[in-house]
Length: 84
Picture 1 (cartoon, rainbow, N blue to C red):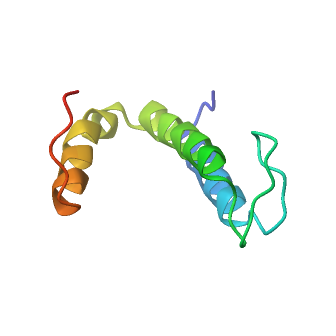
Picture 2: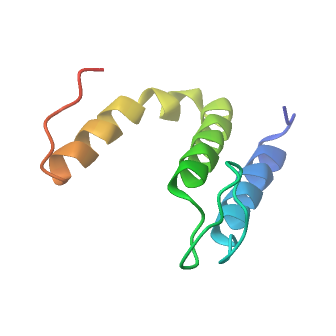
């Protein structure tokens, strides 16, 4: 765990840049080869979860808002609200 806010933000930025830099043909964390310039969906989901965890550690109040953000995203896509 990073001790300063700046260090935490730098780790988050680095993780985002790493995810954005995943190029075609890279082997993902699940052992699958990414196609069409994208990492496998499972790998992206895992990386995003790790990034969200870093954000939640840096700002617990923001993390508390996640359920509302997910519900808003589901409404925007026309999905019924989740039962979480």
